[in-house]
Image (cartoon, rainbow, N blue to C red; front, side):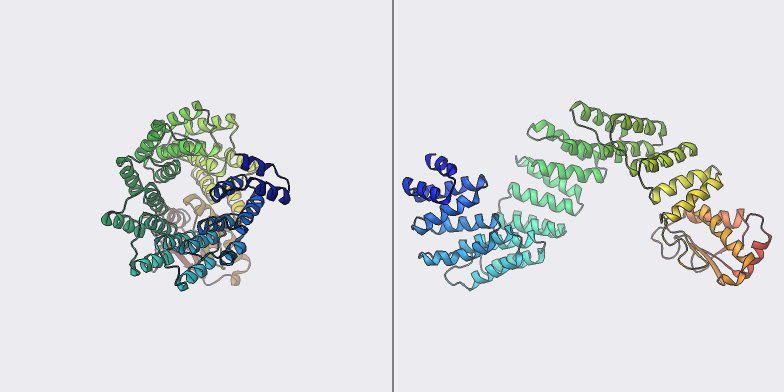
Length: 517
């Protein structure tokens, strides 16, 4: 304690060295002193103390190895790589553990390339035979750098050398496969551990849960976490939160609720806003809206501020349930709470208005979101155009559609003359787009008929190259408008059921007689 306090109090290198000379620390005092200084963030004093002790022959190889890793954490890689030469200068030979520390220092500085060079040097050093820890360090290094294939190669090499992988090997390998998005390979190594009788640690289970999470295998992740519970291990807070988020995205509300309740019952986790939001999202996606509202009340009672995204989830849930009144009430509550709204929230409200045929409120919300500085996206335009078209508000729909085209909400509306592309359009947006487009083409035919291509084509995006299977509401709406309502010469293409075509002669004749344009 006297050594630590006096070292901390020094203001210069000379004063620090004077304290060390006077107090004469033993070799066993050096590492605790170095750790204390590093934890205080005083690497300068740490470095001076280490060099002072090394120059006096107080230190052994493990001291140097420890300092190499300190240098790595301090981002002094060149100095760390030079340390083996300093060791040899005082009669110490680097060991396999020294190379292992160098690899860790390299990875602390984020350079796998240098770590590979160090490993190659270790291979070539006959006095430092490779062991399990150095292979573990390399497997971990490869995984951290996103090179899962290299991690697997080092795992195979260690077995070829007759070395038996331990729990740390598998933990690093499973984590490497997880980072590489190869959850199935991680699962195979997880099972291999069990078959070989290698003890599964908390780190093992954490790595496996993360692998399942990265692979979107939430059912499997929940099973792995249950397995560790059965063995008396408590999942980490990070693991629980990660799994909660996965369950939320996939609507696994029962599993999410159980994990959440277990976190609260354990009494050792900080049940934060993210945990509450994840459970609310899981319940909302699982059509458990009232349960989600109860969770919202509990969240407020716990003193956790409800943000705009949480309100968005609930508004979206009410919209899907067809309850526009409660969706609007939730929106009002959100505004009164001071939480910031967002585009997704407005889109959910617009959709709720469309479902009940309230185009006037939809228009007000559409205007309001822009006044508040939110830029409508394709979903916003599609939804409000659906409402306006359904309400036969054609003139207003034309205005909104022209604004959407100007804002490039619909890409490739007319990629080439005589070709209308309705990809990404809703049924209402497609109908309005056709009216606008046909009006333009009719005017051109009357004024300069030779400026149009021979074939006019309207593509709905629901034809031979579409991934959608079955009847398309867009294609049906387009067919009804073109054939039944407008009685235009467009017919469905024989080669592509999502395309409607006509030639210029037929279109010119129709355009001259129709009174719609």
